[in-house]
Length: 334
Image (cartoon, rainbow, N blue to C red; front, side):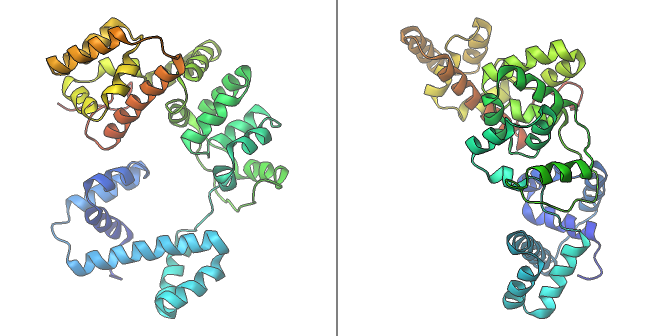
């Protein structure tokens, strides 16, 4: 395998993992690398079992070594790998890690921290600092924290997240030094792209509808262009009527009836009729009857049910089973 390039190894790995998993990985790669790997996959007619096994083993060993480094440092990783793989193989794996310049993700402790503790810490910081740290959080965790911020601060932090394009490593290090009692320091040598519209959209798609609406409304006043761009990329329950009929039917097969009924409670008539049109006559009649006799429900319960439907839509979209239009970012060839 020594004669194979890194791109060739990546192509073999993608082939071995299968289309569903590979498509999710490819979405995380830079555009230039996607093109190179895709070209290599297209030009690979056959992968021998030996090549496949060696690439997969290399991938597993490297991933395991990376975790060892994060847990205890390079020497800790080397000792464990020596025991597991032998000195020669361990050296090869460590060399691979050195070549890709393994770095710990900034603010990793914030990703693992208790949400309440993290919120209390962030409330003491400036909006620009909160925005930067939230860019490194899991979208659902960032959404929870964002929802707990004071209303005015929510909008300001959201605006800053959507406006970030890159951040100097010096700034990140300075912030971590100030917050060293909570976060560990790290070594970052390049400007890293964080934030932006996609980061904000991911966070808002995990937030409650009330939080989402408040932020979008305020963004449209503060920065109309940014607000319009975020709104164009943000998929809400009401946007279900923009899906193709066959895609809606796939979604509805994965949504329990009780969740769908709650999500439709209080929805506009055009949305209800669109949903009913994509159900069997019997199923649509049953839901109509249940809605008619359903008593008052909490708005938060309706929003939670709608978020569950949106989560199904996003999952199917990520898997390539349905298509969500996102402004001008995605073109479809029919």
